[in-house]
Image (spheres, rainbow, N blue to C red):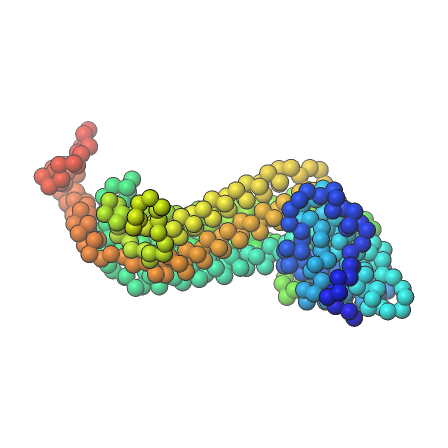
Length: 425
């Protein structure tokens, strides 16, 4: 079979005509993992069609081989449909139907034409194939999020081990508090990252439920009995993932709880990463007028007017990424609210927004870990001086001899301290 290196066009008239009706923006070819996911769905559907007698064995074989060819990446340029288009995901679905049909016709090689709708799309709708492909794509992306967060977790634990029992002055309301160890600081951060990893994994696992076989609105109209279940089983075999047909196809078509839940987990992940970067930024402030307890690697000049100034560039870049995550999550929520009756036609927005959120989580975390956190150092000399301002001994005196006694004792050494006035009996 001829590879697509000669400029041959495999998409058809539906795809070409739809371009003029779509807003400017990225095409689905710019999301190769989504192209792979949708192709895997079409491959599984062809096999289910063969098993249920609605697709001829030789046609099925040609479709499967066409899908395998697409999965090599050689035909990604044929998926020209815009990610965002009106009419739900019909344009995207037809782009796949047309390309697969054209390739399958070449494979048959006997003059017969594999039909985009009657063969490739038999017993399917964009309403059930698109969300299934989207779930597959998001599962892969969430795996990448977990992989990066695991590396960040490892870095946090290594830093906790490296500094161990070295003490630092804690703050509450940005004021001097009791001391704690650097190991405790990083262990606490590590625990928060480990928790969000578990939540991301749980959100990913919920996406193994797919509506394949629901066809238009959940009734399965146009598909033979058992078709959706068989297609989902083939999908699980091909991907090596435990995909399963949703228990209630009407719910799966009308509601997008799993996507929204995953988006909310990403928002929580962004909050954790934002605080981690912000705390490092604050503790590295100075070098004379701020906290200056953390020393960051000097990466670039920080001012075009103040010579020698160095900014916490990486922590701020990470914080920027996390702010962007929240914007993408807001988009998911808006699109979820816009669904009505039997389906949500704005699923392409979910795909773009979720990918945007996950990309920013991964990029922000990786940048922070590799360019900032792994190389940063705690200034033990600065902390040794500041630890003397810890309120540890006053808390201990208060526990042993009462609050008033401890407050009076502190007033002798710290004129800025304030004694709570009131009935202490």
